[in-house]
Amino acid sequence: AQKITQTQPGMFVQEKEAVTLDCTYDTSDQSYGLFWYKQPSSGEMIFLIYQGSYDEQNATEGRYSLNFQKARKSANLVISASQLGDSAMYFCAMREGLSMNRDDKIIFGKGTRLHILP
Amino acid sequence: DTGVSQDPRHKITKRGQNVTFRCDPISEHNRLYWYRQTLGQGPEFLTYFQNEAQLEKSRLLSDRFSAERPKGSFSTLEIQRTEQGDSAMYLCASSRYRGSNEQYFGPGTRLTVT
Image 1 (cartoon, rainbow over the protein chains, first blue to last red):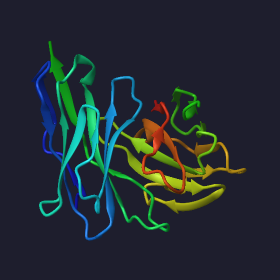
Image 2: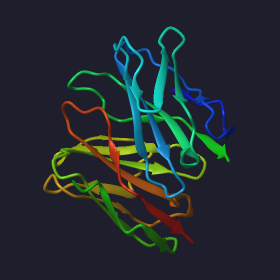
Image 3: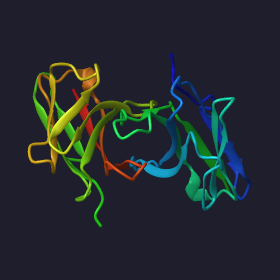
Image 4: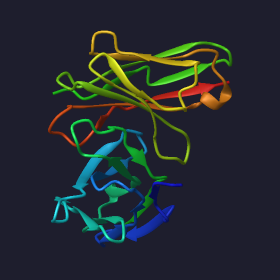
């Protein structure tokens, strides 16, 4: 079963508009972490934001915020005031377990390609 | 603070040849990870090290693949008898064991097997 589901293969958004990228996840662990990474055409994976399963507040990093709805197992990324440089692939990812002996691998979704239109 | 570096950035090889990739993590990071990314997919976990110890290997890592991190610093990933299905981007990432949630990725090595 897929652990991370990103249902939007591609999105087109007008510059300066806000955009929401969807992500749902599947885990039976109580402790886990959720990530969003950006991958521009150059190929490097850029860390954007992290949300721990026990964090009570939604994570924010500049123009990025994570809309975490635990009961729905949803971790959508919101980008405010989009810019042309936001055009890239965006991956939602999960790491199960938060203890010191956690399994440290990250499981990625298939990604959403975001196009920002001028 | 230099980031994660990988060498080479691109490799073209003929089927059946062996290839080796190198990853240099961020210097104070003691965890190092290898991922493989094929076109249109997210990265898939292959293996990871804490210092020189290899802690987990994915079943994706067939016996043609071997990874080492001999002194707990740089790591190498070797693919023996390459197949066309091995064509992919091979990504390396590193992190601190404690206190850090993010893995920092290198630019990747793109392998093309002809």
